[in-house]
Every structure is written in structure tokens, then in C-alpha cells.
Length: 166
Image (cartoon, rainbow, N blue to C red):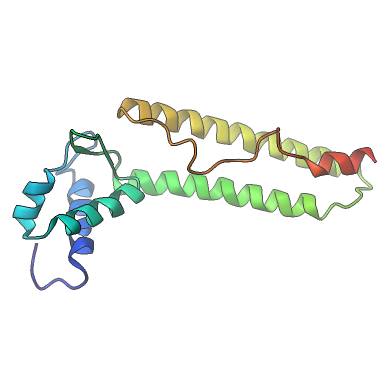
């Protein structure tokens, strides 16, 4: 890593590792060099290594096996596609919620039925994505983080249905 680069050392190290992952020098499933090796190779402290790995973990690029190593989970491109898909689903839910909240007493049951169909389609899409993520986490030996972004379920009150009935 060149000394002329700007920015904090942990960001420079994260950038370097991200580049190696993107180039395929560190392929998906491969273990990253140990923390001590990264410290030695890049002349940085343990805090710099820890903070760089935290950035990559938050981006969905790596995951750690306690007592073992840190492994490459996805390339930057794969991670970006996953984030985009989840962002699009989130946006779809928000738009649907806005439309439903605007219906105080729907005069047209067809509009409500259309919204229910859209909600069902979004739920199916979420279920497929969740199944794929669970499978991916399983392949890399990690538990699926169910508590990170809980979604509203059918158990949550559904005010749009009450408005239709009366």
C-alpha cells in the first residue's frame, strides 16, 4: 500500500482488500490473510485491521469464523446487487404503505384488491430473496442474521383491511 494515499489507514486497508476481492486475488470463499499478517504487510495496528474488516463486513464482502479466519463472502458487485434488490423491495413497501395510508374509506374495492395483490407479490419476492440469502449464508457456514432487518408480518395489525370492512 502506497504511503502517498490519503485518508485514514483503516479506509486505505479496506480499499486495498476490496480491490483484491474485486480482482479475484481473494476469491469468494477464500480466507483473508490473518490480522497479524495484514498488520505486518501494511505496517498498521490491530485497530486499523479491525476497523478495515468492519467496513468490509458491513458491506457484506466478508464474514468471520470465530477462532478461525475471515473469509470472502461476496464480490463488491454481488454485494451491490443484493443491496439494490433489498433497497428496491424496501422502496416498494414504502410506496405501498403510503398508498394504503391514503385510503381512509375506499370507495372502490377494486383498488384495495389491487393493493392486496401488490402486497402479496412483494411478500413472495421477499420470501424468495430471503430463501436465497439463507442458502448463501448456509453455504458459507454462517447463521442467517434474522434480527438485522425485521419485516412486518401478517401478525402485525393491518389497518387497510379494517377500513374495508367498516
